[in-house]
Length: 327
Image (cartoon, rainbow, N blue to C red):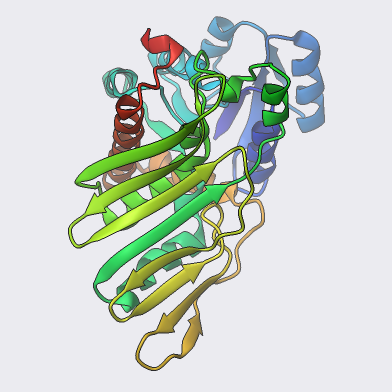
């Protein structure tokens, strides 16, 4: 499977390095607005083609799949272009700014017989699957707390009066859509789509949510999601049930999982070894779906992606957080 990349950021580097650990996945093409940057990137990773024009890249017969890691607000137009040229697309989370873009893009993918994936890496890793397999141990679920709170160095620029992409409404930024999507994807994968959504953000001077608490209501329990790009936290995640509690260290990636039986008080370690470059698991999953046309798995991922976007869209609606593409 030959692929190209749009974007030359750290997340793209991590994707390429992860893809090097997958079987028969080859980088052929690099796009950047800057030829010099694209060439440096291509030379580093031995890509054969360099592009500064997306239309030319979309026409290339050297690309089966494109990985898009551009600013959030640019995703839709770039995804649309490559789908219309019958290329499979892996788009970094958050895949789109709103549900209208999501629905239109997946219709284009269907019409052109290609597949569209949202790169939410955490739900593909072995320890997340292990968590999902073992969740029955807690019995009837009564509460869950999932968190991802990590201070962004780009917040320092905000404090100086600047507006970096990830903290900009123009570029569809904010804590919920950048970090909050990881626990949201986990919640939807584990529990399904919630009945109700409530979001309580901390709005920073650029107009986006720098931090926030998201409440997802399910039958019989509530899942609380904490996300932030303006503070650090070392909080573990927990799923609490009537029979016991599962605790895990982080949402993306999960590396430690333990179950404590409420009755016996005994603790059982559940995690298994997994690769440090954990994006390899989503790459392998997408490759398998493309090659085998695993419709059941594709539809499951599609459903999760739509539900996650529906949650963030409702959370923003409640708090009048309006992206530039929506104005």
